[in-house]
Length: 105
Picture 1 (spheres, helix red, strand yellow):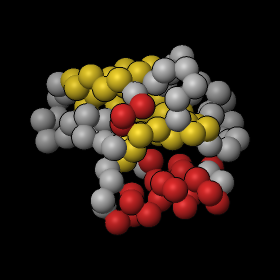
Picture 2 (picture 1 turned 90 degrees about the horizontal axis):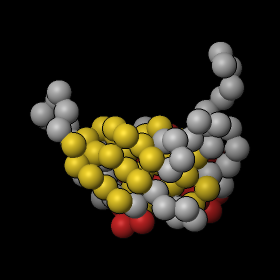
Picture 3 (picture 1 turned 30 degrees about the horizontal axis):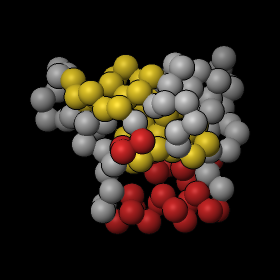
Picture 4 (picture 1 turned 135 degrees about the vertical axis):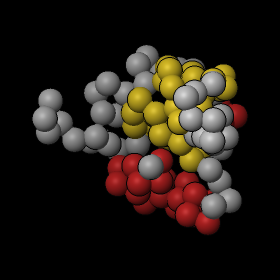
């Protein structure tokens, strides 16, 4: 899902920087919904090297795991990792507008 958001909303330069490693499986990606830079539950977040956070306005931010605070969480599904992700102000690579459409809001 992280790759799909980057492909949809990223610039050509962002796609070049982020997508090859995600597509090859060299990098694990995760997608989360964040409020004020905090995503309370990101499925796959504990294992991800690339994290995309979407804020309440639909804006996206692509981050590497070393830019964020990752706190592993237990979830109901023991086969998939989960984490709380906190992105500090100024971290990451802002994706283009309309990562998530406004239809239905």
